[in-house]
Length: 247
Image (cartoon, rainbow, N blue to C red):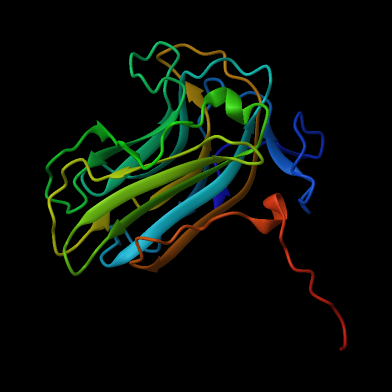
């Protein structure tokens, strides 16, 4: 992976990691306003073959207390409009969407690579009574998880995501395919995945602010609609301590 804009490693956090965490340092960007910061993974091939596979992304974020209400804050993106593509972002401060200030995922291309353009926000799945909001990630760390997959047996495509307030009660899940037609293959054009982003753009206008990031991971497994990368035990606790040296 490589980053397009640098930050600093810091242990001075406005909100500490959970008590059970073993990690102490996080990546900090002083201001995400008007920047184009990304942590990028470059695929070995372009297009990338997603046929019969599940590709998932996960990381933790904390937004500074002084951070402006969200503008067009990107969370993660993958692909190109000529193949499988999606982007995740916070709803903007002047957005008329009723899910204002909650993270969203848009599918913007036909995963079958047919050239049929898609463009929709994915709907909620299950209990959405306490969706994660922007301010929930200013007083707690938040875990973001996104998966894209293709069922080789049925040809169905799916993009799904879930958002968890670590140590809190806010959580919601979304999923769908925006009407993408089943196809025998699925591909991602573009050659790279933006595993996480630290940028606030406009419109709507936002002054942005500081952002803290930790434990990004990208995982590729055979098609499994129940697979999530899940929690990092270094952040949320539960790591088993392994003895070192001779037994």
